[in-house]
Length: 287
Image 1 (tube, rainbow, N blue to C red):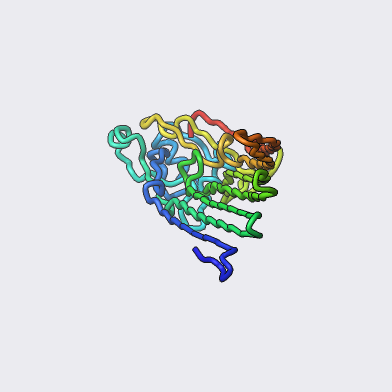
Image 2 (tube, rainbow, N blue to C red; image 1 turned 45 degrees about the horizontal axis):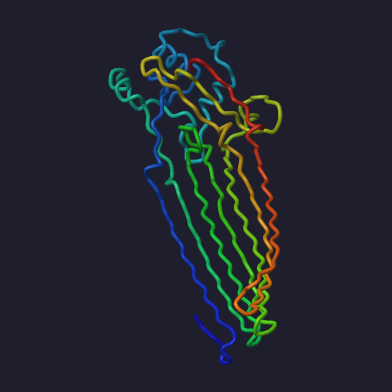
């Protein structure tokens, strides 16, 4: 806290920052066919289906889109759909997964700032200003629902609060107060995508947004599914809220009585941005 030589201006500033890297959210248990290996050739895919489902398919039965997706690699060199790391059916069924995906740490940053300024315009006039700002973005390498990498989600969130207050002594028995304030809150989740659907030959209506892929039973032995891609519920959506406020009060001291006259004005604006509707969902019973 500091003041000028004339003791008319007083101010205070503060800052606080927090950095969190969470390794517990950097891994995901994944269910894929027990027979899926790094051999993603046509014969390798046929072998994986035969080993996992006991079904023999031909090369002509393999969709080019599915083959491209199985062979897709992330910038790190990892397969989009990982290979099975556990090949023992009993062990995989007991654990409920047969692969573990390792990604970068989830991050959460918090930056907070506070400013307070008091200015004595004169002996009868005082002006006060306050401001608070907070930004706390978070990142999740697996997005909202996915169990594979390639679709990280960043939640941008923050708040801003500012106010001005003026107190004016008109006479020994009459004071006039004015207050104005502004508040802004926002939270928006955005999911990135390492691949676009057109890269795999997928044609979907609307924007070139990768679909949410849901496979009900990724392996019959384990009995659990595989889900990846942006979420259709929490993938790309958020809210932005603004609020303005103004108030004025006139206080009059008359003998043993105090009379107050005033008015208050508030305005709230709420904007909802929902881009989840541009994301499709593709459901499959089996791999």
